[in-house]
Length: 334
Image (cartoon, rainbow, N blue to C red; front, side, top):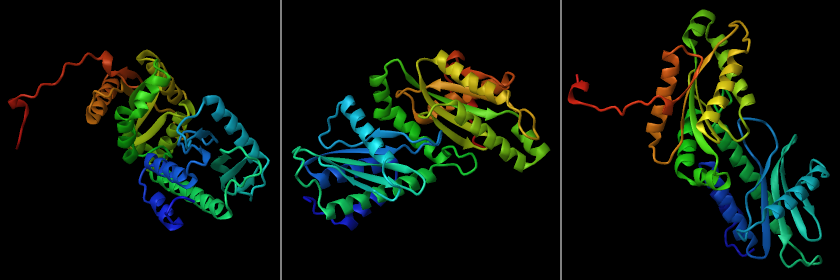
């Protein structure tokens, strides 16, 4: 290898990453450094997602930085085919022009790496035994760290994303390339933030106890998971309140998506409690807002829903609220 880093140093770099985007970037750079310019590297990973437990491989790394969609699809199909025909305990598969690396648990594949010989010489050696061993080890470390980061972002009761991860995810969407990428790949789509709250939840706890209250939270969470898409982000914001980040074409369609979720909850029979309802407020995400301002406006739309009959969805933009002006008489210091 052309890199001067030892295996311990590379592992230390991976386990020191504190969020998934930094971990992906670190792993990508390590792969490119290890493989130098002799190879093309393609990495597909199981998407850790709180919404649905399904295997979904995504393109992550390409040493040259350029890849055509059809090339990505071809390699993805090769990877899946090789994985399907491989015994469970095997993590390495050599072919004349490429080497497959797999990260797997006892019950499911997590993802892997395809290294292709750039020289396109079937008789040449793609990787040494030492290089293969190190890449397999780094792959295992990467997925272990990815699992740790994923678990730390999950609320243990609802199995939705937790409040601590909410701010980072929303900031990424507002100010990073996530928002711009959505506009470039699908200019008709926009991101929306919804805040929702289970109506009269205190009464549920007071009447039936906190154990039944927790069951209500779990069931509402499951209903939301079943309704929203794989790439939508669902959070337990606190107590009986949930936050939802999702993309769609326009505000009217966003309202319909949220109203169907509200209706799903309202039409579900809950054990002991029978029926509960949910109020929702939402706003379109824009990079011209401060994070706290965006959350505050979604909350105001939620409060409007609750103060005007509950079990409904309100778009903040339809409220036509005047900006609040703070005067001297509005402030009480003591």
